[in-house]
Image 1 (cartoon, rainbow, N blue to C red):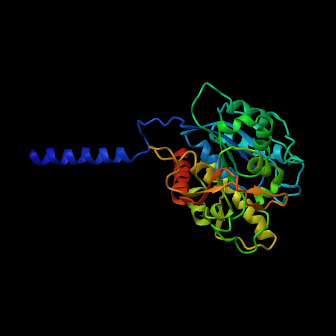
Image 2: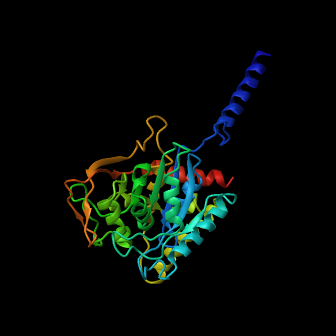
Image 3: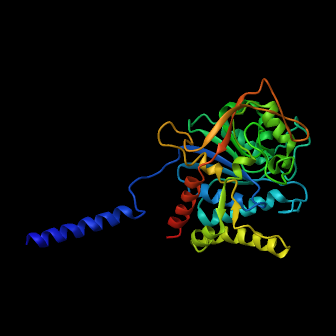
Length: 338
């Protein structure tokens, strides 16, 4: 009898262990931050991976999504309606992951600023200002930009007082010479900065907005192997299939035109999720990644850094916790597909 009781006890203990290992949990995650997402979703597919990850992250409240433009005649989208195309791609993904979402999806400007003093006013810019000036919440606001800075620059020019109401996280800018060397065959003006140099000049030279910058040497760390995409993104529900198809289609074009695809792809916009949704429980901050505090440089008309001895201190990230970032993305895709 004792032996039988012991075996039954073992069985229940084993069942209890299995239950603890299932994704079911009594913990309800609620937003610890507000985010406005601004990205060129009709361009490099890395922005769609970032958007999916944010949509699957309950610790952030998405307040709005802005589809932004690329450079004129960009190879990813050479149309004149890049912002509308970006917004359409974002809406398609939102409808897959959060079909009942109530936040707006805007098409931003299709053109860059004409100079660093004249804003482009549209519904996206107005929403940034409106959200930043809210007085009914103390939840921190992040404007996260994975491409150019047209809309946030226009908002800062229109209502400079919002600078103290939000934090800007930007994927962009070249290496700082004292921190890293550029990659082989690099472009002199970094890709995202080159989308709208005037907007970058507004943000860095003319505003006091807090900046967390992820420059090229940092975002190039975000390498996802194709083997992992095959195993842990493809066939992981509609969202996984959507994301995999975007990247597979792009690599297929590379192959068609004689470019040899690499076994890895830089999902360089994903730090926007790492630095917002994946902050530590206590002393909230992205504590597993490294940054330095630097004086904000001046950005000249050619898109290059110049020393600014009066520049405010900004965060410049040097090392990103890509394991945390990508393991969380893949786990969330798996859970969402069940």
